[in-house]
Image (tube, rainbow, N blue to C red):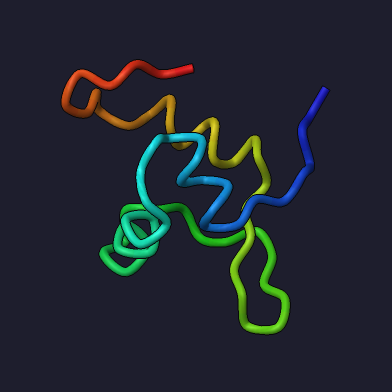
Length: 66
């Protein structure tokens, strides 16, 4: 089953245990996938998009993935 729940910067940050500004910086530097949806100028990603992205990222400073 696919998870079509939309996540904001805040949701992504909580998932990968960083601050929302860090996620914004990832996007600014092209390290985050393109948003799946934009509403009122705010980007959102499907949870599955982010989980796939997290799984493909190199391990970061020994942080455990969920």
